[in-house]
Image (cartoon, rainbow, N blue to C red; front, side, top):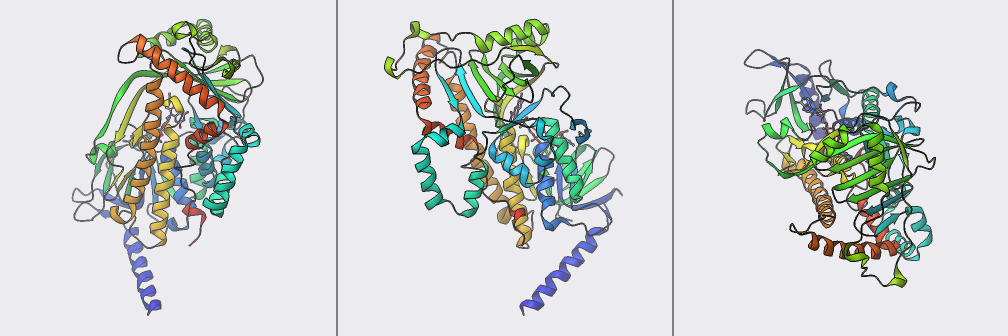
Length: 510
Ligand SMILES: Cc1cc2nc3c(=O)[nH]c(=O)nc-3n(C[C@H](O)[C@H](O)[C@H](O)COP(=O)(O)OP(=O)(O)OC[C@H]3O[C@@H](n4cnc5c(N)ncnc54)[C@H](O)[C@@H]3O)c2cc1C
């Protein structure tokens, strides 16, 4: 009986794929091509999804029409051959990846295609500020080897909480604190990987309209700038903060402008040792200095738009001077340096970042906004990456959230394929993705907003209230700095160890 139903099922599948192979025409006469998963937007989120799905065995093409995964982007996507050497100046747009994002990118075979010399792991992270002496130094190797409390916590987790898979995932995330890589370098590696896996058509065209599932076909469609139409079982909007997919599905996004811009560029230092990531909370906003290869670093300077414009207009020499001052200058002390911590408990002053000597690229600026989509999925539609959420770059988490979305969505799709479910079904497939990805985004957005607000120079418009806040913040920072266990768990949260999927469905065959 089971055999007969299996045969009927596979004949049904064969008939479906044979019909699917033939394109149909719509009422206006334009050809309608068909695919299973249509990814709108080939940024890192979209390209990662294309690779993750291509890793599974369920998207082999069965026809001469479109492949079963299609990715659309109207821009010219970068080529990996441009990144073959490190004898070049690093590009200014750099992203920091958490240990879990690195684990995910390895699992889909994208990270291995990057030029390893240009992927820079962080050994340490140092967070300090302009008002107050407080700082936090994170060094996962030292913390793990020296703290008995951390050892005890790990022992309990390994014995009583983690299964074998969880143990492996956990260990894979303890080798570094993350890494930095140029945005387009990683994107080029992912595009190359998707092409090698050969299950995805990458088409350079613009989506001009998205039509929700029609009654006639039961499938959503996109219309491209050349008038062609593609219909899919599932449309994924990975088309960035101004997502056309989100808009055409009528999904509202809430948020606000930070009234800040993020200035990025590549600089170099006189020092050869370049493995520490720095973040200084200035009164005007956070300034990050991220290590790249050799003695290059990338900066992300968040500040009010007028100040950003002024920084862009400075000559290179004056800019480097201004940057060095912002990173090096002695912290201001509120209330004459009054410290809530007893003298005996105070820490030795921190080491400052290396002196920077040169700026190597143009200075680019990006407006900074918080934007959160009310839904991440609907009938035959899902949103990932910046199309679902856009956050402050302060903690370097924006794309990491997007990568966790991709891991959850790809898991849901591959799982559905394994069980013979319709991948576009919201209740059975996409709701699970939405619940997990939203919970992850909410926890990260809340944490970032709490930290960001605690660093405001003024509180409720008052500088004195801001100074009082700084006293308590510095006390809290000193206390955290003294506790290796607290820092270790803070890092585990930021690494995604509590929220990123432990296992990936494409790594397990049926
Ligand atoms: C200054 C700054 C620093 C940052 N630093 C970090 C960091 O250190 N770490 C981190 O994790 N994140 C960081 N981020 C955030 C990160 O850059 C973004 O979250 C990430 O780039 C979003 O990727 P995405 O693929 O979702 O969207 P995008 O990169 O925006 O890709 C969307 C793609 O869709 C295409 N597209 C759009 N509309 C259409 C259409 N109609 N038809 C066809 N194609 C279309 C676009 O061409 C584009 O290629 C930073 C952001 C800023 C502003």
